[in-house]
Each structure stands twice: as C-alpha cells, then as structure tokens.
Length: 277
Image (cartoon, rainbow, N blue to C red; front, side):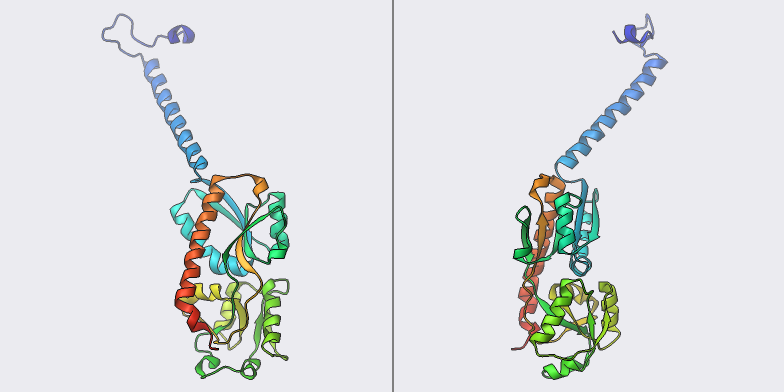
C-alpha cells in the first residue's frame, strides 16, 4: 500500500530474504527521527503536566526577594533545571495589580491581613520580626547594655521612602523613644545597605530573617534590644482565578517548605539570643 501511494519500490524485486532499497533505508531513517521527536515531545508534555518544566513569574519586595527568597530560588532551580523563574520587584499595590491582571503568578511579600483583596489567597510563610541591624564589631555591641540614648548618637540608614520598612524604621524609633535621629542615607538596594552598614557605624532596621540568612558572611549583627514586631507577615499571594498550573504549585510548595525550615531554625537557634528583657 505504501509503495502504491508513493510510487516507489521499498524492497528489491525478486529478492529473498527481502532487501530494502536505498529509498526504503532513507525513509526508515526519517521515520526513526519522527519517532524520536514524538517520544521527546511526549516526555516534554509529561514534564509540563507534572510541573517539572515551565516558567513561574514572581514578584515581591526588594529586601525580602534579595535577602531571603533568592537563595531559595537557587536551591529550587538546582533540582528543577527545566523551570524558569521570571522575578520582578514590587510592593503590595503593584503585586496585587499584577496578580489581578495575570501578569505575574505569585507574589512573595509581607502584607497586612486587611490589605488582602477577597479574590486573592494569602499563605503565611514567616512571622514578621524586625531588628536593629549593625556591623559586626559595632561599638554598641561591646557594651553590657544598650540604652536609647546610646542609639541616638549614631546615624541611620533608611530604606526607600515608599517601602513598608521605611515606615517600620520611623515607628521603631518613635516606639523606643528616639526623637531626634540623623538619617545618613536613604534608598538603595539591600547590597547597598549591607555595604554601608559594614563600612560604618550606622544602624538600620531590617527583617531578622534577612540578617539571619546573611549570618554566614559574618558581616551583620543585631542589637539586643526589643523593638516590637511589625503587623505584616511574609507569605505567598496568589490568584485562584488564574487556574491551577502544576509548575506554580510545585514552586509554591517548595518555598513553603523552605521557609518552614527557616522559621524553625530562627526559633530554635536564635530566639533567646536576640534580645535582653
């Protein structure tokens, strides 16, 4: 039937056992390539269906994305090399807009309960906790106790004015009684803040999870003074109206597991070492 359809002989006539013609051999080679391509396409489809391949678009606040989320992204991709992560920065309004419009898949950021729209789902992954951060070897860490008057003598690094952490800084200083304080620098990325802290005696307010994650660099330290916790908690914000996608679910589960481990480490190893009553 194939010979009739193609008008070309597939086997040499009057030869036993059957001997393929040159055309038959060439056609068979093409067939093997088609078979392999079909198998590869099937494997690729299975990887997408199982969430082992694809892309995830995430957005979040710069301090948390750079300080604690990016190391987890690296760990995730080491085990899932076929999944691409498209990451951008944004605060609560931008992330909510992106999720609503479907331009991002997940938001990873600190947020207040009253800020969460009804059409979005929030999964908390880490309790909010801020600390006063400084360089290792800062003069205040060499003293037996830290007083408000001691803190007021040093300059401060302020996060960008539109960030929640900036409002935390002002609230922290007002809450512990620091009325007059000098802001030596404002804005900049997390790496800029770290460079300024390690190269000076300035102070700033950072999430403790960020300082904890950077502890291996032996560059940052915290002052043993309780400043109160923010009313925002870090979590994953998603839009169920976008429909389920296995690759997004796989990434979200990984982040939840990683941050559960991080929270346990912070609680077990550091909670009693941070502050003195």
